[in-house]
Length: 445
Image (cartoon, rainbow, N blue to C red; front, side):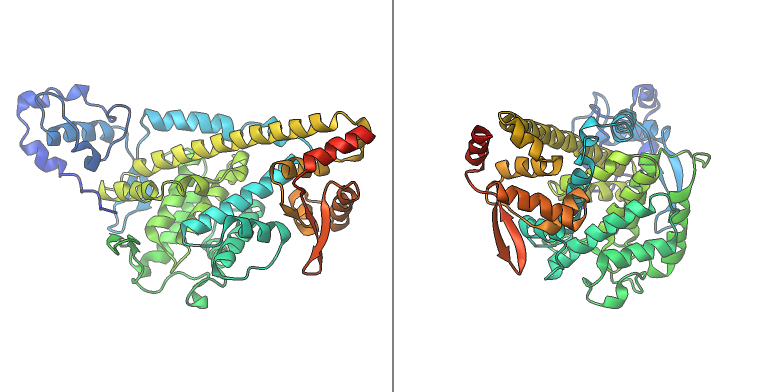
């Protein structure tokens, strides 16, 4: 990735602006065509008539400065980061407030909450680890997590750790964040995956950690010195725990994103910083009542365009600590993740409705199946050849082992699943002709 150009010094630009040009600045706005552009993007555009590109940039910076608020978070030179709230930020926050803290009937039906929560935790664990280099296939990783199998290699261990950490966040959402808790979460997310096992759960003790482009090794970011990390972590925890009376007021969603940003910027650990940063984002969102974020995966969205994720960091760092770039990128990511969840819920609702319509021809059969078995059949109809195990069914629905075993054995007895054994455990496979088998049962009952 090519480093974005650092914007020209506005003080130097101002020295060369004629007075008649300066009078034109009342029209200047923080946005260009509705976008919050970095100098590296703006320099390729045609400026308004009568202005140079540098003068145009100066006017934009003047307009943005009126929106900026200084944060109690510092860059590695000791200067405060700042943020602004241009119209797109307010627009995104409005929609996230409405969608992520409201209600969703699709998650309220029997068994849906547990099933969808497990799916979202699995999705985030896999994609967050893949962003950091885990190479395990999705199918193998998902089977491991659903069945509760122990990880077999480094990639599986990363995903397994991420899954456990996301579960731990659910239990910590009402707790305050302390440096000790951050260290404990890092230990959980990196256990068994680091070159030096002692690095799990401790701040880095050298300045060898750098953020580089994986393709060419180019240096993208040099984090703060390791000796500053304890104080920086204390400052970050104080920011994360601050209430509504703190000044400046920072919207809870922006506070969660800035927590994510600072872990990535400080890189306080030898490895695992990205996974920890996204985990703490989820903690902050849950702590402030954005319960729907338990069911979304931001890493799933970030993995589609990882270069944009990195560029959002670089734009904020190279433009004098203006975190608005990163805030806008993450707000967009959250909205996309919510939209993906809504599409998933609609798709699952349609699949479930199709299964119910298929079973409607046989009231006798329909009454013999509980909502867990109906949900499994709905999945099996769309994924022939999929294998199901008792432990996976148990985890998916949050029921006792015996209840899960009874569910699957009953479906096998009806001929709707094929029963076998693997590794001394029962395995139940969705047959290719499941729809025909269901139709046959409805005709006989």
